[in-house]
Figure 1 (cartoon, rainbow, N blue to C red):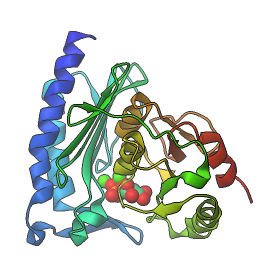
Figure 2: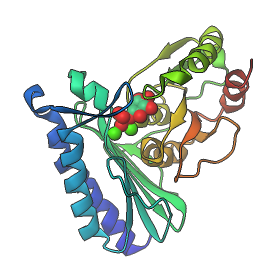
Figure 3: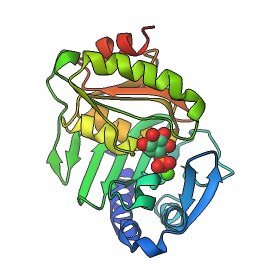
Length: 263
Ligand code: IPD
Ligand code: CA
Ligand code: CA
């Protein structure tokens, strides 16, 4: 691999670990600022983590574009190097002290997803992957599950909580999936949901509306672990806009896609 990129990714991993300390601070510090909609919150922690991450990433790769959730002026183009950052994925969990959130950082190179870093400081689990080099949790290789039929599968879902207008469709689909799979879970962090598929802890995940920072980092980790992530139509994700996204161990991709798209 390109030496510059290799060093940049190693430095980014260290940065993510350091900054994750902010997620662990006292509940009293979690002052909530409402952004928009029913449940779309941003805390001072999201803003602080993002500020430090952006400063650090600019030093690591000065010529890179950074697409980050809490920025109003994102440039949604994929140049030579594009970082895609969710400073806190699982903000609602953070606000409630649910202890299941992460920092998610993806790197797209020349328009192609190249590296993913997802760190959950509560479990001290660092998921990493680089194109063609496999996926790891805390340095140990991970692979997707071997479950080949939906009936044997544990599926996580996202509820698209910031647009309650999607609820009827989300829960209609979820009833169909629930009746065909073993059981359903809802964690509150899409990035960790996708990493859990990568680690073989669950078999699939889907959500009606996911944004690039929710899926960019974890998608590389999942694909390097042998899994598959697409639009509900089966098309590729763009990394520059929202999608109806589904992530699986690969074996059940077609079956889950059929159930999601059935009436
Ligand atoms: C949210 C979480 C959640 C998912 C939402 C995301 P945030 O991200 O990933 O699980 O259902 O669609 O927006 O707001 O916590 O960064
Ligand atoms: Ca998110
Ligand atoms: Ca976020």
